[in-house]
Image 1 (spheres, rainbow, N blue to C red):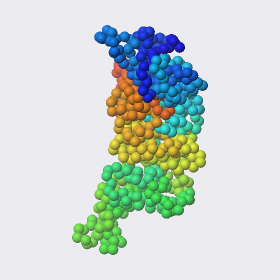
Image 2: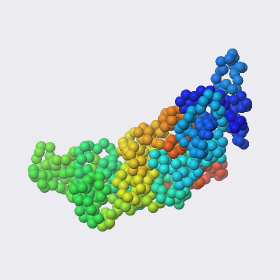
Image 3: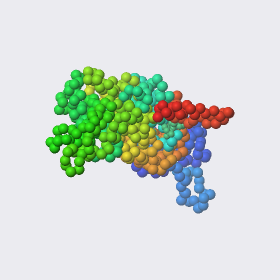
Image 4: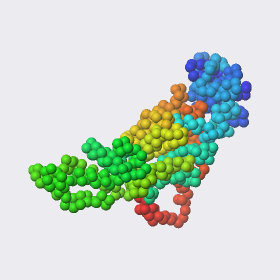
Length: 572
Ligand SMILES: Nc1ncnc2c1ncn2[C@@H]1O[C@H](COP(=O)(O)OP(=O)(O)OP(=O)(O)O)[C@@H](O)[C@H]1O
Ligand SMILES: [Mg+2]
């Protein structure tokens, strides 16, 4: 063991150990075991043998301490270099790694480099329980694995500045899921840039919301409140909200009375029950209520000048009411809804909202359309489904992701044997999460917080991917069990990562700004101890990788702008 000796313990306080580096370690990067070792590099692992077991500690700092006899700088001796370490676990006599330590080292106990075989005990082989994430940075011959169960059910976050390798890490993990021993895996990935279909290829089903000709997510699947938020995002009045919900209940009940498959009694159908209805009917009622005038004081006969048309979204026209309470009379809500019904009409006509349309209501009365709709979006038969929101206007994308997360949670919560949820856990991966869960996205944040708090119970896991963790709700981040911290420069964001680290190891975040592309500090439940890992590059790469600047070398210059424009027109 002499050859791997690094130093000796000089102080122990709680899990913090200080060791003085031995004199004969020339410089700070000795070669041993065929590899160059970095003594005192923050994040590397040291070993402290204790009888039959071996304590492992992570280096948290390196310092030069002036010895008491020192009279000037020249008197400083290399052995006055000290490394500070945090004890994190123990390899027992049987060679098994456990978190926590059963005994503490004593003064003068030796501190060694870890051997490849020691490192290997930290990372179980990849198996149906463990996924290979990459290689340990300080010893690239060791494959770093993570516990898939914990990664999924205890939620995770991948954070890093732009271009640090977040999407590549997601692609790499999902490629492993797609190819690994998880034939019944269920992962839904929200793809903000349309970059994953190239990386996941045939292993995933891609649902392009904007391009879909069919209604992908008919509004009627959603609770009335969410429908209202999507179609009328501007401040709605309490009266409008109330009337809208009332009409949605009516409309859902009306549909149910004519649908052979609806088994629940009318009274149990509420504004949120996922039963089809036609939003145009709701619009027509609200629009009429806002316009109507009557030719009698009992308000039974409409003072109609032109009849509207629900399916064409054409309003009823009425004679204007008079101010002095004479013919024609106002209805109870005439004029009270302002422009809100018109907003709803505009959105019903807007092609950006096509994927939210009601679908074929006529045939829905004989067969329940919901199973088909859900299996089109969620990964029911395949391992991964990619929901591409790249061409959906961001205000809509935000609400749709919120709605889908809400839907996912509601389904999982009502688990039945063999259904989606505890029996078949599902992982929701949200790339560019800060886009969907900014402070203004109230419902999205609520749904996210609900899943982060209760998802584990119902088999819904989250993987939040972001360059701005400080913009995500703190409650959601505090529930994140595993953090994959890629290169990160911003101080505020670093402190979020620090908050997820065990005390004593918080200064590991100091290395975040200097990590290479695809290199990460991984810490938390899915990994035996915080480790610096070079994540396995995905193959193929997601389409969002850096563009080829060699195009600038081409001569003559040829840019087919018409192609860009055609795509822009067509796809919006
Ligand atoms: N594991 C890796 N190994 C080596 N290089 C990598 C790795 N991961 C990413 N890179 C490099 O970094 C580039 C950017 O990666 P990626 O698109 O995943 O970053 P990102 O963090 O998702 O960025 P953005 O925030 O802009 O979406 C890639 O094109 C690739 O060149
Ligand atoms: Mg990305």
